[in-house]
Length: 184
Image (cartoon, rainbow, N blue to C red; front, top):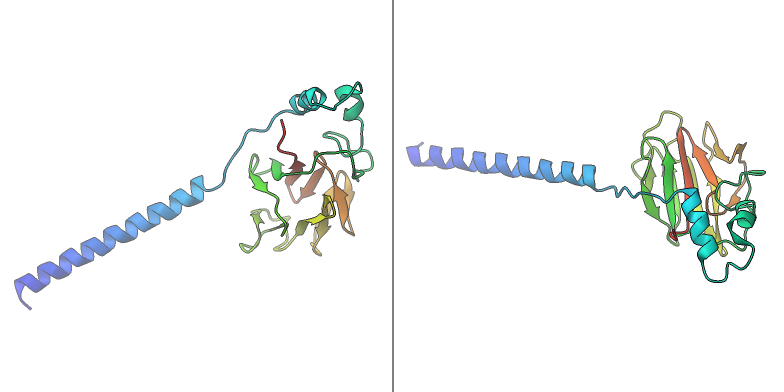
């Protein structure tokens, strides 16, 4: 081979190597910064915003804080639909992905360890396809997909689809999730 051919092969190898490194950096950047972390308003801030909202009436935040389905109300763990604003996002409130927020859409959200899920939880207590949150009428329901360790709404393990309201916590493995109205 001529000296020119060897030099061209070396240069092309160097260019391919740099292109590979740049592609790896873009993938790493997307993995690290691809998940949007948002700061959530505290429950007190949400109650104050709700009380100040037009049409809140004379009842105020103190009355609404005890209403089933309102933030912080666990009662039986099953919220009563109606009266609450429609949820706009699913928010991780504790666990490895704390602060992660996903928009709720007409297709719902599948949660599990599998990379095919909408919300992937890297947790040994989570099944590959653990649970799903889907629209039902004007609200949302959570359904366990036959997971080994179960899905909990409040403190109760669910065996059938359960209606969710904003602020009601869902526990999957070591992760706690809740619906958020997006108002705060």
